[in-house]
Structure formats: structure tokens, C-alpha cells
Image (cartoon, rainbow, N blue to C red; front, side, top):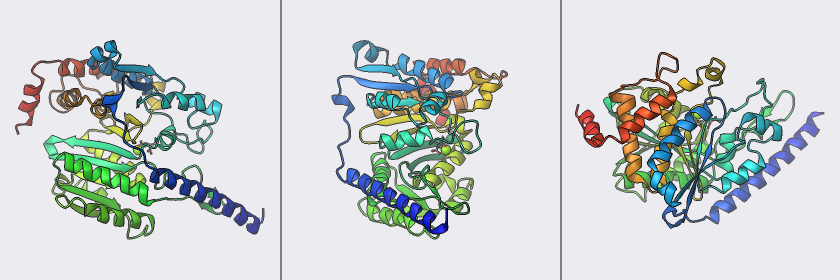
Length: 400
Ligand code: IPM
Ligand code: MG
């Protein structure tokens, strides 16, 4: 193809992308209300096992949920439903990030607990289809990715609000190889998409008595989209005069997260999609590894809760899947409980997680046979939740 023809084709493609994004903005403008879980007769929790270690750690998290919600499941207030088919084999068969029938089933749930799914890249044995996470976040409009990281002994207590439907991800599979030599991807920031994320971050701070929000961008270089993110943050901040806010560039922020003198000053951190992806892995590592971090993908109608890590196919190949750490999925389950109105149980589960993973450590996960299995660890967490002295125990660890 000659260059002129290639350019024409790329322009046409670009035109379609613009149309799609303008439509998306219209949908956001038409805004819906937040779902009220307390008004639902039955809250349906869908469980997607996913790939690799996903089915193992999801099963542990499911057991925890079933135990903590026994009465509500009996009374019909809660239904736990398995959603099959979100596996790489099925997705490749349909050549879709999420096969249509699976997406239909997901849309019949109110909230979803999702195990990690394989995200192919060029050169993998799988066709290079889009990530199921990214597709689900887009299809269910899960615009905020909340990722808490807490390390009491370092005085670290962060909540990341990662923008989840825009940035470099929004068109990840729609970039163009204009010619053999020219590849272009896109980054998108919309007023509506940015504002709703930043508001949620400030609202979270306000509701929880947190007096500081940090915005992270690279607005000095990525001037248009990151520039928009930062200027919208400045506007939104005016509605929260009691909350101090500051802004950081992603490079120095990456350094500051490991600066023992500065990192304890960060509290709520709001940032565009890709920076959020990267920074939250770093943050999770400080907490003890990505296996310890859960994540909530929040939209107005749906919400999805997941681990922040991948499906670790190597653990399965090496026969170690039963030793995969379920803490991240159990943390996700705790966030799910809080989100649908069981704040007390959510808090207790988080306390138990903290005791088991950070302080008491009566069982330890190593990812290998010299450590506990995921099921044993989940049982340890459950026993801890049900310990009548749970709160006393937790408090005793808070005294330094
Ligand atoms: C995450 C993951 C995903 C992402 C991948 C699996 C597409 O890394 O949830 O952080 O990049 O968002
Ligand atoms: Mg990631």
C-alpha cells in the first residue's frame, strides 16, 4: 500500500474512534444514578474463576464469602452465582475479550468477584486478543479502580484511585500500524471521565476524614490529556476546601513511594490509567507483593472486585497452583462486602487479613510446598474472623 492510501485508511480509522469517544461522552453526560444495594431483593454476586491460579484463589475467596454470608444466602438476600467461560480457551474460541454469552451473564449480576485472566501479547501462543479486564471495565463502565495499600509498620496507608476506562487503555487494541514503519496508539482523557474519578477520590477522602489528595500525572510532557486531568483536578478540589491537595509527576512519585520520609504523607492518590497500573504494583510490592493486594472496579451500575496480579501460569505448570496466595482475592472479597452494604463484616475480614498476613503469621504463604496451601491460608483467615477476640487481637497489634 502506498503512503497516501495508508494515511487515508488511518484517518478513516481515527474518524471512527472519534465518533465512538464522542458517543461515550454522551452516555456519561446522560449519567445514571448509583445503584442502591439495600433496595434490591436479591444481590447477585457472580464469581469468575479466570485462568491459571484464578480458579484456585477464587474458590478460597468464594468459601470465605459463603461463610460470612451464610444467613443472607439462606434467606435469599444474596445469591452467589458461578459465571463460567471467562477462560482464555473460550475467549480465543470466540475471538473476543469476553464472549457475548459470558458478558450477558455478567450483566445479570450486580457485583462480580473475578479471578485473574490471561492477557495475551504479541508472540504468545494465544492470538493477541484484548484483555478481559480492560474489556470488562469498559463494558460495565467500571470507571474507578480503588487499590488500597496498607503497611502499618511503615506508617503507610494509601488508597489509589486509578482511572479505569480511559487513558492509554481506552483504545489499547485499536492503535494503528499506519505503515510498516509507523505505529500509533492513542490516549484519551474526557472531561466527564476525569471529573467523575477525581470526585470519587475527594468524596472518599471526605467520607473517611482524610485530609489530603495527591494527583499524579506527567502533565509537563503529556500536555493535552494529562494536562486536562490535572486542570480538572484543580477545579474539583475547589469543592473540597477542607482537603489539601498536591500534584506530582509520575517519575518522582515512583521514587517517593520508596522514600521512607515522604511516603507516609500520601493518603488518597488519584491518577490516570497507565500510571495507576504501574504505581499500584510498586505500592503492592511494598505491602508484601502483588499477591497481597485486592482491587475494586467501581461503576454506578456494576462493580467488579479482583486481585491486582496476573494468572501466574507458571505456578500451574510447575504444579504449585494450590500454593498460590489467595490473600488478594480475599481482600477483593472484603471490598465487595463493604461495597454492597456489609461494612462490619468487611472490616472484620480486613482485620483478619491484616493479622494473618502482617502480624501473627501462624501460617505463611511462600508459593511453594514449604508454605501453606491457599485453602489452609483461607481457613486460617476465616478462623481469625470468627475469633470472638478478633478486635482485641487486632488492636493489640496496633500499639507500637
Ligand atoms: C491490572 C492488570 C491489568 C491492567 C492487565 C491484566 C490488563 O495489570 O489490573 O493492573 O493492566 O489493568
Ligand atoms: Mg497491573
